[in-house]
Structures are given as C-alpha cells and as structure tokens.
Amino acid sequence: MNTEALPRLGQGFYWQDLTEGQVFRTFRRTVTETDLVNFIGVTGMLEAIFIEDGYEGGAMAGRPVPGALTYSLIEGFILQTMIQGTGLAMLELTQKIHGPVVVGDTVWATVTVTGIRPTSKSGRAVVDSTIEVYNQRHEKVMTYTARRLLAGR
Image 1 (cartoon, rainbow, N blue to C red):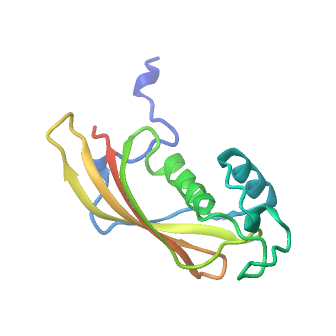
Image 2: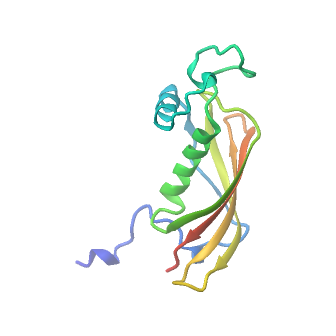
Image 3: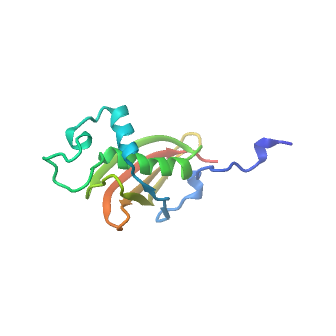
C-alpha cells in the first residue's frame, strides 16, 4: 500500500484552497490558572499583575492574562487546523487589544482571508488574514492581522 497517497488527517489548506473573503471560526478554549502560570514561567513575563493574586494596582476584576497568551492560544488553533503542514513562515503581524482576558474566560476567533498573492518561487503565496478574538460573552478582546507564507500544491 502506498501510504503517501492517503489523505492526511489535520492537513492545512494550501493557498489554492483559500479565497479572499473566506471566513473560518476556531474552536473555543477556556483559559486556566495553569495556562497562566506555565506561560509566564516559560516566557519570563513575571509582572506583578499576572503573578500577584488580588494585585492592588489592577484596573480590572479577575486574574488577567498576558495578551501574548491569548494570541498564542488562538495561533495554536490556527496552526493545528488551517495551516498544519502548509504554513511556511509568519511574515508580518499587527495586533490590537480591545479588552482584557482573565482566567476563566473562554476565547475563540474568526479568521478572514483578506489577500492572496502568489509568489514567483515554488508555487507559494503570501496570504493575509484578519483574526478577531472573542470571549464567551462575544465581546471582541483582540484583533490582529497576519501575513503568512503558505505552500501550494
């Protein structure tokens, strides 16, 4: 049996499979205290607002998490599904935080393909997208744009 000819489970999209204006929705994920502790431990983001329970200088209720953690969780969804095996490089990223995410919030996102430009090399394309991140109350907490290099068939 030629196993190379079998469809690959979890294979991401080649750029030819995408169209401008196409919109996807990610899974949802609840941010846990363990996520926060592990993330700040591995990144060194040991800011008092993240490590001190009941931090007095905090401007929000709950245990806030770094925006980088929220972004990383959403990118994990995108990497595991949309671009697994086809993503070649993150070329550019711009990000805006609209509201806090705290431990116990459940985050998810929509991904809108906003541009596809084939390159002159190896059948690749530069794919632009806008990612809007929401919490469980459907409040937008983050928006970012991503420019990625994707493989072609």
